[in-house]
Length: 369
Ligand SMILES: Nc1ncnc2c1ncn2[C@@H]1O[C@H](COP(=O)(O)OP(=O)(O)OP(=O)(O)O)[C@@H](O)[C@H]1O
Image 1 (cartoon, helix red, strand yellow):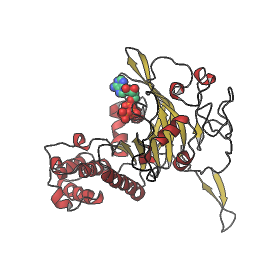
Image 2 (cartoon, rainbow, N blue to C red):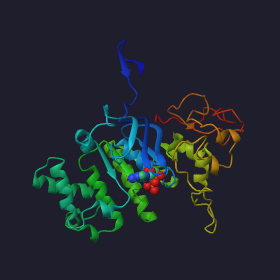
Image 3 (spheres, protein in one colour):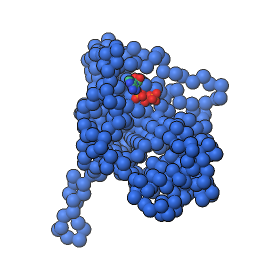
Image 4 (cartoon, protein in one colour):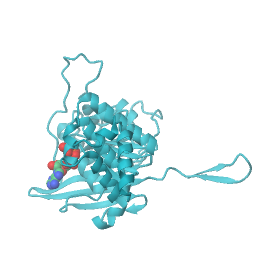
């Protein structure tokens, strides 16, 4: 909290930093499997403020969806969860589904990968929207019908009055996803969690849907959590990035900075696998070598070590913690990495996350997690 002097006189005004809408602190989620406990989410922390977009990226199985579900109190029934998730000041972890409904219903909404499974195939889309508005928004029948059409217009559907009478199968994949987004924002949520919202769509439509999410975020001051396996989707669309590997966040920082100067070898490998416009079309894309780790049972050392090009003996023995590589401070709002040999630093056993070569105060602040 900072104190500012009013220009009109000696009276003081207090300027508080943005209060997080969603504060995820040290959240872990373990699932029982025949091979032992699966640490699907391991000590993850982040915050989201109004109007901010946080991207969660990582390969398939890295724990992105499980993190999102745990944060919403939707982890599988057999899961063991620890940590804290506060939404608008209220603790969500450990609360029953019944207790959560009044908070989550209007407060947090989700958009999923496959719009066709999220819609009822035998109901016209206007009816589906109107039902949601009546049941969850408390609108009367006529007001709900009118609002449904407004919402369709709001998410960029042409001729919304006519389209409201369509069944889901009569719409394109992009239009169906727009309808799902309309359903998600129908009751004015404060947080929108989008889990691979464009993975099932072709590239042009992907861009339109991402533009729509950015537009809704700006107009409604929504906090957006964008989950994707594709760094290119998160780049330029999010303020802060969390890179997940085997259930852990291995790098966290302002998106532009992480993209410009990735410090974790895993992030660097993910970046190398993103196609670039200036690459000749026949260029073979790099892939992250090896297969993703499944965090089952107890393990020693860095989970990425078996696939890492910069691995040290040390990395197989001790687990690196997420820390600010410039200041040796625990994870803060700026760029942090969990690596003993971050990209840009001369590797050396026992140095821990430390000062990086050439690293200085050039990194942007985003006030993020
Ligand atoms: N219901 C479940 N029971 C047991 N293990 C599960 C269950 N759901 C997911 N997992 C495991 O939890 C880990 C994290 O899965 P999660 O779905 O969060 O990954 P992800 O990063 O979202 O990948 P994807 O994009 O493929 O969904 C994986 O090892 C996965 O196999």
